[in-house]
Length: 418
Image (cartoon, rainbow, N blue to C red):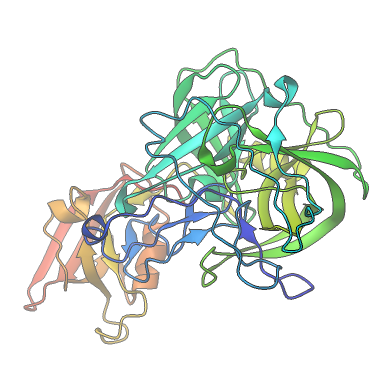
């Protein structure tokens, strides 16, 4: 939380909730965090998924519900009906001005429509979270003519499929994850077969309190002409702690943020924060909104680009992960009371059509060794698998519920983005 004891939310769109029947197929998989894009609470990106709660984490970006404003704000996130199959072709992301209970207009300026210049280099991002039966949406910025995209990590976190639409042309591309920095909430994507794209114009100069800004993004995930929320810089070098829209799950501690009074909302995450010259000074990331108050936060573009350059160069280590992790496909309880401490990782579920299913792992099995490394807990299993990539072969040893011992070698598949 920040210096005032407040939490802030990512500004992503609310992932589409699975029906009770669909949810039962992914036992306890947490819904994606929303920030202003999609991310998840609980961690399925390490070759397994926790069978913990299924509370959604709306993210700290635009769309926050209980962040720094007294009382609980209404949920604003909403995913498109089928963002991967057919992104909406119209919609400006605007909304009607709010009024106070006394009938007077509130102080914030509601989002309008981005100008033609503000649309250059902007993309809509739509993700599918296969193992959570969910979809989400956010925004990104084009860094190169051949389709390198900058966005928030929480926009694509735990996604298994990513589709990106270029705002100025309407052309849609499949995207892969080049790399991520989960701690600083930055991710870089690469579009397949893209060329000749217009890029953003960054401004890494000095910022001042009171400078006018415009936050642009895929508000509410509706696509079409991006929304544009005007405001000004009201704080610099701010630190915030993200929290899920439901209020229970904390995200990351983000530092050095630009604070604005623009009305940033769900779906804006990963979008540009423009200065008066329509040059990008930040990446929309988190917000708190109410009819009487608008507070948004953006990662300074200089910081985001510095991290992106490290990702592009393949500089793995520290906070940076390159590509997507290898995936085994088991669920487990990291704090399980059903197993003796130090005895292994107790499997509480196995996802269909995954390496774990193919070798016959089942609920109740205890994974004890991975490629020669003794496993003493679910958390350790997570740590070991997080170092592996798709295509890596690992040897697993486990005990079944009847006490029988098994060993098999599996090849990991592409896992959800971290």
